[in-house]
Image (tube, rainbow, N blue to C red; front, side):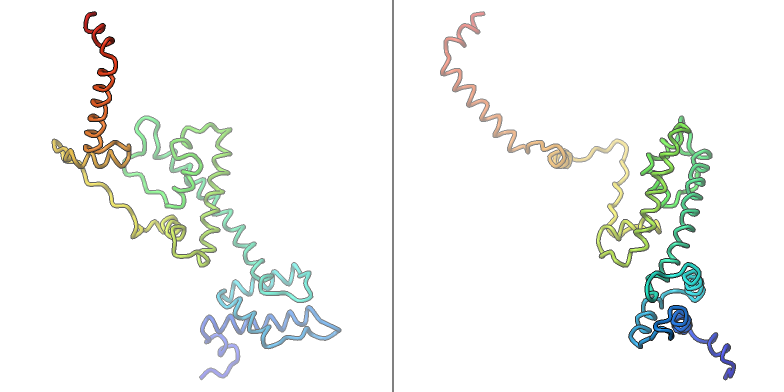
Length: 260
C-alpha cells in the first residue's frame, strides 16, 4: 500500500482525481476571494455543486482553466463553475479557429489537385470528410470554388468557416438534442456513418428492359398529378357529351361548316 500522500492521490481514478483537484482549488479561491477578512466560507452544497459541474473535465484541463481564472480575475464576489469553463471554452475556441482555417486551406489544395473544369473530379481522389464537404457545399460547392476569382474567394472562405463552425457548435450541444432529424444529420456530418433511415439507392437499370407501363403511370401520377386511366375515360365521356349537346343546340353552325 502506498503511504506517500502524492502516490495515494495519483493512484485514484480520473473522476476522483478531478474531484480532489476541485476541492483543492476551492480552498485556493476561498483564500483569494476573502470575505470580511477571512477565507470565503465554503459549504458542503457549494462544494458538491462545483464537483458535479466540473467532474467531466480532465485534470490537466481543470488545472489550466483554474490557473487562467486566477490570472484574469473574477468580478463576482466568488467564482462559479461557469467561470472556470469559460476560460476553457476560450482556449478551445482559439484552437478550433486554427483547425477550421487549416481545413479550408486543405480544401483549396484538394480542389487544385483533384477538380478540373473539363473532366470533373479526378478518379481516385481522396474522399472529403463529411463536415468539410458540407461546409464546401454551403460555400457554393467544389466546382464553384475551383473557378472562383481570387477577389470572391474571401467570401467563400467566410461561408465555409461559418458552416464548419456551426457543425462544431452543434456537436458541442449534441447532448441537448432529442433523438430527431437534427441529431441524425449531425452524426452523419461528424462521422460519415450511414443513417438507418437512409434512403436506399435505386436499382441499376437493366439495358433493354423497360419498367411496366402501370409502374411508370403510378410514378407520374404522384410527381406530376397526371389523371388515372379511369379519370381520363371520364373526362373523354364528358367532352363527347358536351360536344353532342353543343351540336344539337347549334345545327345551323354545323351545317355552314360542313358546306364550306
